[in-house]
Image 1 (cartoon, one colour):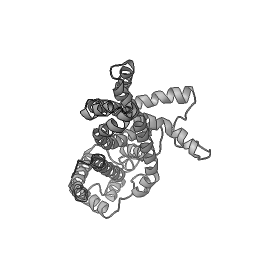
Image 2 (cartoon, rainbow, N blue to C red):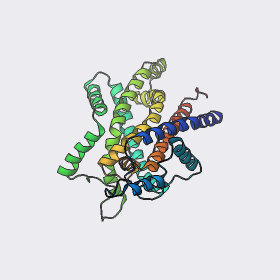
Image 3 (cartoon, rainbow, N blue to C red):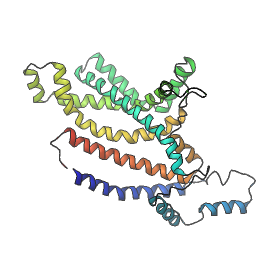
Image 4 (tube, helix red, strand yellow):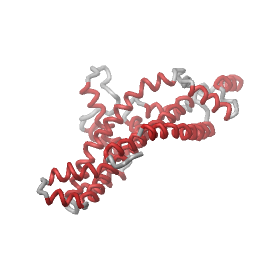
Length: 315
């Protein structure tokens, strides 16, 4: 296992290098300039050119990439073009908020989806199964941003049950309950699509396992149905779901970009959106690479968990 992990980590180096090349090229070839260059409409052409030269944007693309790569490898992420703040500081300020949102969303998705999927499989072709299937398809089909706006309009604006956005009450005490109150809606919206898909995967996996001979043997021995389902069937049904857990990580990362913007959640996603609008290249590149690293780590964790759950699997 250790050899496999080391081999996978070594393989990530060329993968991340390729991602950085493609991302940097796309970003630099996109139309527009950093907002700081055009912030003053009265700026003279000479001052504008001096600003471009100061940022190094007049150098050839390979030179700019080589400079960025050299700085990143040495641990120097650069400063934001807009605020002048070190990129590492911006990420350190916002990363905990995004991790909290992602963890809460994953917790909700797993906590609700797996039991609901099991119920749907156990009660196959009943009204309960059809109802769960209907809501699962609706959860996959409904766009997260629309669902989030809908919840804000009804639960926040009309009913006043939840805050419209933010991470805590302005001017209020930063208590845990207040944070959870602000966290619930964005976490629920972010978890919706993954929860719906995970429910369907759980149902399908459980139906396949239920037809196996060892399940019939367990029933023939007189075991309670709950023991048959949760001890014998569920453990094996979780095997294909572990891969899905690893693939959920990039979904949460991509979804947080939109959800944080809608709910004014001060995290990495909101920082990424504002950086894209302002063409803040140093921040965009570091956040892109950070997301790529998380995706690679998520897939590696999925492979490791696969071997832990099923001892028959060896790498």
